[in-house]
Length: 466
Ligand code: ADP
View 1 (cartoon, helix red, strand yellow):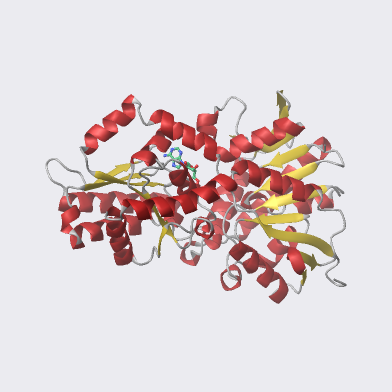
View 2: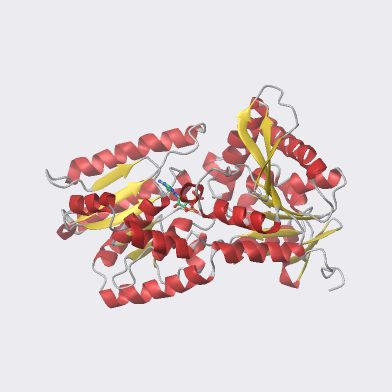
């Protein structure tokens, strides 16, 4: 079995426990342990003029390689091009897109450093799996250095429609970079269509059936690999933790009121202001729910180094204050707003306690919280998943109450519908969703991508003759 090499910006350290590391990190660690592997990424540290030598250490069957970056390169790469340009672009927020040539150059430079540091560690038959928008040019940089082995890329966030993508000054170069991979994985069929449309209409690439592309003399494949969760672990966590002291306190504090829960990083793609406003609409238009429902929004702070995230934080504090100011009673706070992380088991138990899981991003690659909420439910009395039509998860979570997050009044109405939904309908919707959560797990996703990347250099049809 060929060795697996994973490249991602953040590397979950071997000491990080499963409860904290998140489903993806755990699944990658499993795949790496099974085959023996190398996990390569940023060390989380900066040092002026940082040397290109990575820190290497081993833990079990996994070798870790961590590269320290020069602070200006790191800023241009992470806060600059990756999160100031690509993140808003891929989430359709052109108003927030900032493009600076220096950031684009820094982004490329960091990818070049990564390729140079990684190359000496590679064997020709390794399978290299690159994760996310921080590293789109990595394969191109490795090819420049002469590496010809199998390299795959998975894009965890949406691929934008061509009209949006064209706003990016470096659009052509970025797609040329993609052509150096053997396999490009996206979250949904919609994302695949968007990228293939761009390739055929803007970069004069040739398409063959099955997502095979020929672009500038390179042949590669583009396909959808919707990411999943560790369903079994979530079910178990939810069952175990629901009787904990912490959850007893939560239930006591609710005193029989229904709970609507939201769990999102504090990010403008998550549509939090609209979600808060929708809750305000519910309380305004359906006064019978006042004092009967509590919304809890868990939103750990994220990317505080990017200005838009700081502005969003202030906006949400103001909105939460105004909803509570308007509707609170001396014994009822309508909106509980928490800015901190929780252990996976606690989250699972909160999901299980909640009558509604409110997942309403303006745009999201997949949204794992939607799947986690479903997995955590009690099958006898499941809650309702309220899901944005712009989350990748909507393709699979067809039993959700699907909403348009731009329609705040419509979302207020959907909250009401969820609160009064009969048990039989809740069960039926939940079963539909759960079937997908159980079938398409994170393990299945990992294995499928690795299997298809493994065979990716074995005779792709030539789009010019197919
Ligand atoms: P994104 O990757 O954009 O943050 P996802 O919904 O796909 O969005 O994934 C978020 C992950 O982070 C989920 O697994 C969720 O459980 C986890 N998470 C979100 N908020 C918290 C929190 N407060 N504490 C711990 N984990 C959290």
